[in-house]
Every structure is written in structure tokens, then in C-alpha cells.
Amino acid sequence: MEPFKVHILGCGSALPTMRHNPSSQVVELRGKSFMIDCGEGTQLQLRRYKVKFTKLSAVFISHVHGDHCFGLPGMISTFGMLGRTMPLAIYAPKELEPYLMGAIDFFCHDLGYEVNFHAVDTTVKQVIYEDRSLTVESIPLVHRVPCCGFLFKEKPTLRHVNRQVTDYYEVPVEYLPLLRQGLDWTSPDGRTVPNSELTFPPDSVRSYAYCSDTQYLPELHKMVEGVNLLYHESTYSSEHIDRAQLFCHSTAAQAAQVARDAHVGQLLLGHYSARYDDEKLILDEARAVFPVTELAEEGEICDVK
Image (cartoon, rainbow, N blue to C red; front, side, top):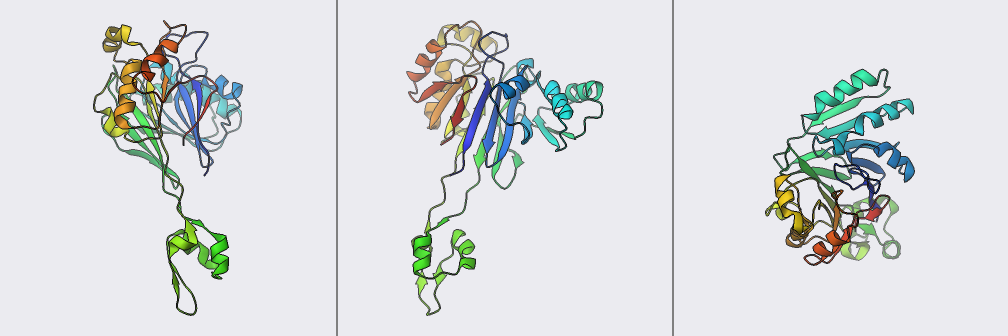
């Protein structure tokens, strides 16, 4: 099974602190890399944690608040100085396009590669990116500005050939790709050997959901049902639920309710308010509702499994 990793570059909220960087992650799957959100200082975090960014093919921006996109123009400029030639795709709410393209036009002359902007409708759940390995779907969220999360889902792989058995039945090597697709084998003497004897099942399909800034949504669990790993913002503890409601954020307990109701494999918390010097309070609150919960931390690499 190939690695499916999430690199945490920043997990703080809007107010800068010395403990946390603003939101950014890199999802790595089957040799491809995708960035989710790009807060101020993200390009330094890429270097600090030795995350390879030469393969970064797309950036997904959840919403147009500075702590989720201020780092994007600087990173785009740096890629140009490093001699990048591969196009970079940006998937974001349409409100970001004039700001981003204006910054590129003003600061990034002779960039050397294309930046292709794809406007995302944050009000619907739909596939916004697809290749041979995976799909990325938007997840509608409710914040003070148009906002969505992202669901990364592997495509099913082929079955695995059991070479010990295929050698026993003298299956020609050129027929093995058909076995991986699920076909049976018929020997020259007319005997049919079922595919289940000749192959192992394919790897299980894994998925990762990123739920950025949002008020608590009781129906959100239906859109992230059964994901292996769920990242859900937990800006506040329940003692500050009034502020969560005022600013359209979630508490740790509310994030855990979504994870519990969605039957996810694991919950990852993030986007902590600067008011907390220690996030253990947030972690304990979430674990009381959904025990399989961890705190996101800069430099952490989370395996989706």
C-alpha cells in the first residue's frame, strides 16, 4: 500500500503566535503533492520540515481569510525564482482570483510557469479535481465568508497477483494484467481457475477530509461519512461557545460530534485560538465525545490508514 500522508505546516488561527503557524497542510499520495490553505510563512514551513514542494501540483484554498491565503503570493514568487516550469493549479472561492492575479501581475514578472485559477462553488459538494489516482471534492461549510472543506479520496486499485499460484497453474506473464482486473484464467485444457484463487484483494480505499473554518453543522457528518482521517477546526473550547457562534467557528466538542456521527477512523483537531497556551483542554474535551482524537502540531506527519 502506497503512503498517504498529511504534513501539518500550520494549525493556528488568525492571530499570530510564537507557538503556531497559520493554516496549511500538504497531502502526499501516489507520488503527487497537494497543498491545502497557505497562511503567512508557509514557504518557510516547507523548508523547515523538509517537505518536497517541487512536485506540488495544486493548491486548495478553503476561504478568503488572510490566515488561509496570505502566504500564497510569496510562495508563487519563490517557485518562479527556483526555476519552476510546471503549471500550478489554484482551486479557491472566486473572490480570491482578483486579489491573487493582481498580486502576481504586480510582483511576479516573468514568472516562468503558468498559474491556473479554478473557481470553486463553496455551496455544493462536487468533484473539483480528478486524476488517475484520486478525486478531490468540495465540502460546503458555513463561515463569515464563502468557505468549503476538501475531501481527498483514493480511486480503487487493481487486485494483487499471487505469483505462487499463477506459477503453479502456468499462467502466462502477459495474462497477469488481466488477472489484476478481475478476470478468471482458463487453462489450455479447458479448466477455469477463479480469479479469487489467483489474486489477493485490492488495497482498501482511503480518504481524508479537511473541514476548515465553520460553525457547527449537524448535517456535516453525512458528507464525511466513514473517512479514515478527519481534520476539523476546533478554535474554541465549550466555555467559549458564545464566541464560536459569533465568529462562525466550532468548539472541540462539536468537532468530536461530527467525527462520532460520521464514524470516522480518527479525528485531528486544529485552528486553535491564540487564547490557549495549552491545547490539552481542547483535546480532553474532544476525547470525551470521540476518544480517537489527536491534536495537529506543526511538523507532524499523519498517515491516512
